[in-house]
Length: 132
Image (tube, rainbow, N blue to C red; front, side):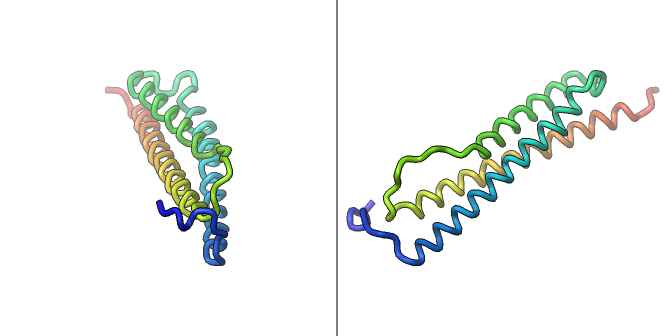
């Protein structure tokens, strides 16, 4: 890191970049909040029903574990973290790194949610199949 950039006021393009990054961070944070609610209401609601998936206990437990991990990942992405003052010369780089991390969390939550839905579908399909 160069000491020449330290303490300088951001230029006009940095201000626009900062505003854009803050807007994107807010959007991705809301996505994570939505994924958190979706997992809690949909996946956990179905998996925790009394008889759903009872004939496949290992698959039911796997779905519950994956869904719980998804809830945790979504929660991390949905939380706003307190930050100390950032040097204006480094603010855009800092916000860019934070946005990348939040995108990773959001994408991981989407993937885990999809896996949970697939496992629920497998359990539901097994229940609807007639026994031989």
